[in-house]
Length: 286
View (cartoon, rainbow, N blue to C red):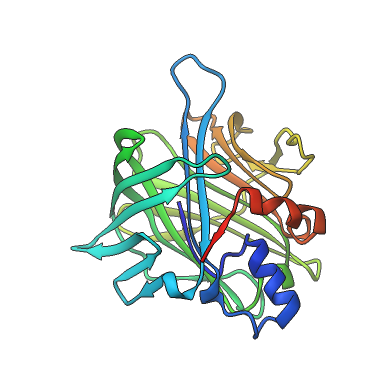
C-alpha cells in the first residue's frame, strides 16, 4: 500500500506539469491511495491480484500531524500504531476493496537519507520492522504478519533527477533484523547506493553494497537486478506487478528469508506510449 500526495506515477500529474510547469501543478491536486492485494493458493503457480489506485484532487485531501485522509480512506497514528482504513474501488474491473490495517512498529528510527547530492529527494525508513493485522471485509480476508513502513518526499519530480532504481527489503525467518538496499541511478551518470541493516531497537547500520545478481527480465523487457543478501543469488518466487516502467517481485533468499524487490525506470514512465496506457489502471475521480 502506498499513500501519495503528488502521485509520482500519475499520468494526470505528468500532463499538468508539462502544461503548467512544476510550480503550476500542485501536488495536492494529485492524491491517491494505491492498494495491491496478492494471493497465491497452496500449490498454485499463478498469483491472484486486486489493484486500486484512484486519483483525487485537493478537495478530497485532509491532513494533519497525525492523520492523512484521501477520499474515503484514511491513515491515523493512534497510540503508537498506524491505523489504515481502506475504502477503494479496484481497476480496471470495478470491485469494492474495504477493511482495516493496524501496523505496530517495533521501533521508529528518526533518520532520513538523501537520494541525490543536492538532497532534493529524501527517503526515511520509518519502521523497517513491524507487525501488521489485516482485516478486510471486501474481500473477506484476515491475517497477521510482518510489515515495513517508509516515506519518500522531494521538491522536484523524480524524473528530473533519476534514471532508474532498484530497491529490496529482506528479512530472515525468525530474525529481528531487516536489510534494505536502495540503489538509485542519477541522470548525471552517478549512483547513490544504500545498504542498511535495521534491528528491533531501531538502530540502523550502514553496510557495504552486496554483490548484484541478475534476475530474469520481464515480459516488457524491463531489466531488474537482485542482490546476494544471504551470500548467494536470490531466486525469483513470483512476479507481483509487471508493467512497462515498474516491476515488483517476491524473492527467496539463500538463507530461507523472503525479499520484496522493485525495479523502476523513470525514463520509461515519461514516454508517451506509457502515459497513454496508465489511465486504465489509474482512473481519476473528481
